[in-house]
Length: 336
Image (cartoon, rainbow, N blue to C red):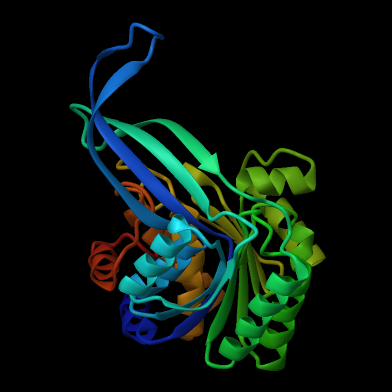
């Protein structure tokens, strides 16, 4: 317990550059009053609408919420959603100088329609995505890499957040890794696709489904997760491989090939898992930038994820919430 309490103040003012796909998350919330005569669906009486930064913006917001300094590098369109997204990030204290505006592509918007009722949180009925997944054109890529290079020297760690939106590809990955190695920076990855794009990074994180897709087999228990994460860590030549397992916690393999399995910090009060993986990679990266071992950082990120799933939408946690959870004995005893 003491080692984690001592780690928390060290998170303050550590600088993390987050590079990745950006989107604006839109929430439309209404009360279900009756069923439609047109189809067997509820008719919602509009209550409110709000937007929050999503995808790669969420790790940046988690870094900020934990006391760190976040630099955002990504691409938005020349549209109202892109302007709203940049303004929201700036208002929330995120450095947005690395965001490139590309008039040829729209800003990704994910619209969630939720129904309020007697439950604690509104229930999601449907999600509508408006997005562009094609790779960046040469001009946009060059602008983004220029921002990356100008900011990287000031950062303590570099974090790639891949939502398969065309940003985290080719030259962006290559330049991120080169800058990290040349300047001895921590470089982490949250991948949702081809893991083998990320060879040589400090830590690569994915979830169970993504690991199974890459490995071509199911992961069903601690033994199979240990074998799978060890195989991926060796093939990626990473310092560590982290596989998140939802309600079953996470499995971590370090550079020595040793694997540990950490129980989920919270399995009973799960209201919304949106963005929990973003919290994991942000907390882990910030903790390592502050001097934590990858094992200590994994424990802390597991605890942080257990806190955000109690909240609606892309949520973040704070130093104060982490401290209370640590003092309550929710970290360090979750090894199985």
